[in-house]
Picture 1 (cartoon, rainbow, N blue to C red):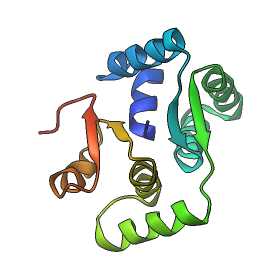
Picture 2 (picture 1 turned 135 degrees about the vertical axis):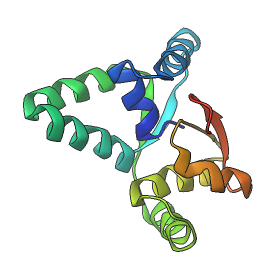
Picture 3 (picture 1 turned 120 degrees about the vertical axis):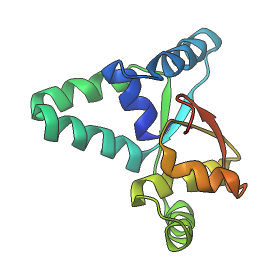
Length: 134
């Protein structure tokens, strides 16, 4: 399960991006997908548009659409799980959707966002760090 931090790190060539690239290549090789919440996809796109304009955001979306990423809609169950997480943890609302989807799918979250450290410490999510926290 990718969060926006991980996908942006890959797209921008930032630290940890090489780990995401390896996971994407592995997905293509083995014909399997990484998952991402539609809310987190929206976060990636709004950041691209805010920083680089609409045309660039559309290019980013087209590039993502070619990747082995299955975007999962934020339905009622995920929305309520994200609301529960938000009520108890100091995370952005979009990050709560990534955590909720991980819980619902029993998936590992791929991130470098240190906001998730307390959730991992509490056993609320399992994380594959692209950049070690600290």
